[in-house]
Image 1: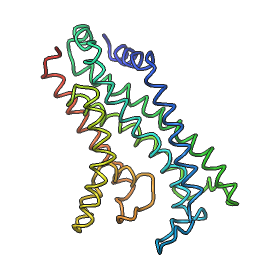
Image 2 (image 1 turned 180 degrees about the vertical axis):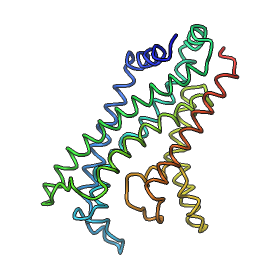
Image 3 (image 1 turned 90 degrees about the vertical axis):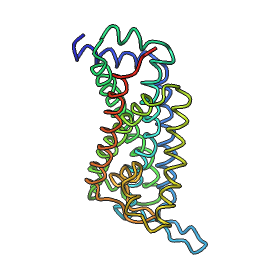
Image 4 (image 1 turned 90 degrees about the horizontal axis):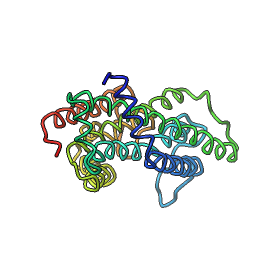
Length: 264
């Protein structure tokens, strides 16, 4: 089968299941909440002596409302569909006929990765639209300008879409490493939502925040959001390179393991 045919086949596998649109609904709902809450509380004094986040009259806040919320609302779902894209082949026992039809497994894995990148881009675009609509409404209600000409906003918005897409590659790699779908999802979500934040806090406490900048989530935040309370992030371009490096590393891992492992 040609490369284009393999890509169409992998896209068909994704789009003929209910999982992709179920996760897409999750993307929309999570982004709506994230952008709305971010816009509603931007610049509001949290009390207890804590510093308020930047107000909606600053570029940092507007990038967080639009680009930051779009990324936060979509990347975990992009990670999940990447994981299931690989583990589903083993869960539903379609890996054997897939690799028999195309004996060169590397072509299958590359096509699968590209197909999931396309879906990841779609997730990022939907999240971005939701963030601009809902976040924009809240910004207007609070008496501020939409800020669509804010410096760096559209760059951050495009980078948010790219970051979401790259997280599908991370999911493909994890799904290849751990064949069991439930276990792979638990590991992916657990590391992303629990282990990595705790590791960031630990590195900061040990005065090793320079290392924390290179974690996947920190690199993603550098592409879309202002610095966090745990210190400065990488420049946006460096964050993009670091996240792309993770995506390529996980994608290469997926190819390497798929070629060498028995599919049964």
